Length: 447
Ligand SMILES: *Cc1c(COP(=O)(O)O)cnc(C)c1O
Image (cartoon, rainbow, N blue to C red; front, top):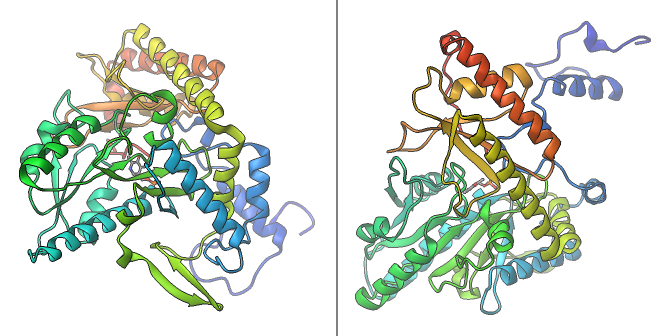
């Protein structure tokens, strides 16, 4: 092809496996041109996941894409870097002594593994007392991520879900107490919910479970889902005890690719003590002449994101993460003030400990709804700002949510605020007529 490229005038291959190939240049152009229509991560206010890393980190990632992390025997340094990260996280979360954990693909894998260990540990306790092990249950609120429902279904555990209510979007001890029994493998508590960014009352749940341990001789552990909050709370709210400072907290997961500030593909599971990992779940094998232990659902995966996580830990330290989290929080508050001043919106849970985001809804009596605002903003300005309904029994509550990330500058927030005000002005003029012009699509809040 002397001018242009093949796909200026040809359709992209999209069905049968191609009989022949094409030049590398054509293939690259084809993929690039397709992606030109993809959403722009810089205008994506929906995602918790990292959309920007420093060039030096990007270089480490690019240079290590060929390294298979699971080959511990060939790549012992990458394995050691994983262990360093786990030790640093255990320190950040106030583990009392030596501990253990795992690198995972994200919080979902970390939660599956952590919850499996809780199930196994419960089984061990029951079997030691010659008690039946056929009816395990797990307690959590409707404010959790879908992965907890998945765990229960995949691994045959009865979910005991505390429904939300209008005005109450996290759970506390009063919700947990009536659900606890001898078959409860754990209470899963969220630090930074995807819906509003707030935390379950982990301190008070811990207190309740300590009481139950004494009075009913039931030792019910807490697992903290810190997918988002695990890299926010230690820096913004260091005096809030939600981690291993609380006796019943036995395991914590966190997504490296959310506020750990690494690109997608990295999560962490950290146990309080080595004995909290059920030994039965660790597989030992002889691989290429060396004994190796694995505790994973996946196997082969790149080493890049582990190395990038370590890069961030040593590059930023507590001071750097603290600086970045505070900057995001300040900007979230700045946006929140602007939204309040517009007169169209109410903030949700303003002033409470929260992830750096703004969750808000329309004031009463509008002829259009949050979905219309989201749609209008995307149509007028290309911002991806999600609208969604809350989980049962708060499903009548519609919410808009803007993540305020490291890359959202003051200048951009000013533009965003103007764009939101203009979207509302357009909808006011149309008297809500816009709503009938499009299909009402139920969206997930985005992760
Ligand atoms: C994002 C999220 C998850 C899932 O994490 P991944 O890293 O995307 O697998 C689980 N729980 C909460 C609270 C989350 O925010």
